[in-house]
Amino acid sequence: MSIEKESSSTRGQESLTGMDLLSLTFRALDMTDSETKRDDFLSVTREQTYETTSNVTSKEKARKSKRNEEGSRFGELRCISMDEVAWHDTPNNCWVIIYDYVYDCTELLKTHPGGQDVLLEYAGRDATLSFIGAGHSKFAQDILKEYLIGELPLKQRIFRVPDGVKVVGL
Ligand code: HEM
Image (tube, rainbow, N blue to C red; front, side, top):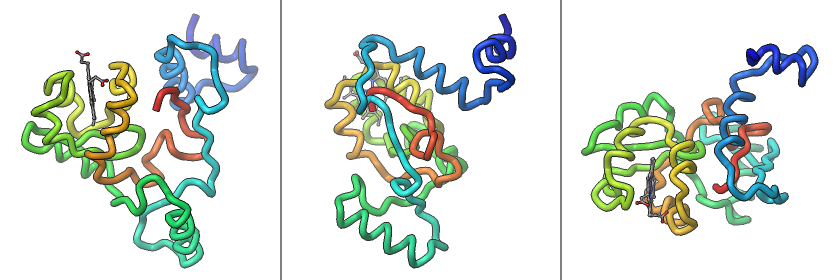
């Protein structure tokens, strides 16, 4: 059955969008412990997202600083576009995107328990799906922050935006 047909039989006249397909892929990947809990899902409202652009209004600035006082996870993060990330795709300069955050994995390449090849495969691009697929432990998720250097601009994000792709395990 084609995707279009399946879509129209399950969702009336609506057709599947790229986001729907990505979301389905994630759901198919997640997998093992199937009982969904409320906090399995990322629930982001427009107020909880923030954009690190230069022309933010004073109202936005006030909101951001309030959020930082309240203990935002990473404070101010540099805004890095996917184009810029794409330039960092070598063993001497390896950035990856996971969950809309940008990580400099150049040093990690030397010590990554999964080896450097798997990381290099995603150098300069999004590695979210593989990071989850590899079944990384809580420890691995915790040390992610050691490599954090920035985040994607709001327009390029697919997870941390209102109605973004929902994933389990991050
Ligand atoms: C900054 C990003 C990453 C960090 C901090 C990281 C960290 C780790 C850590 C600590 C482990 C040991 C096992 C564990 O605790 O889960 C591990 C294993 C592994 N990682 Fe990563 N990882 C990263 C990105 C990736 C990516 C993008 C891939 C792509 C496929 C990957 C593939 C693997 C694999 C296959 C293993 C399993 C090794 C084994 O069990 O023998 N990792 N990683």
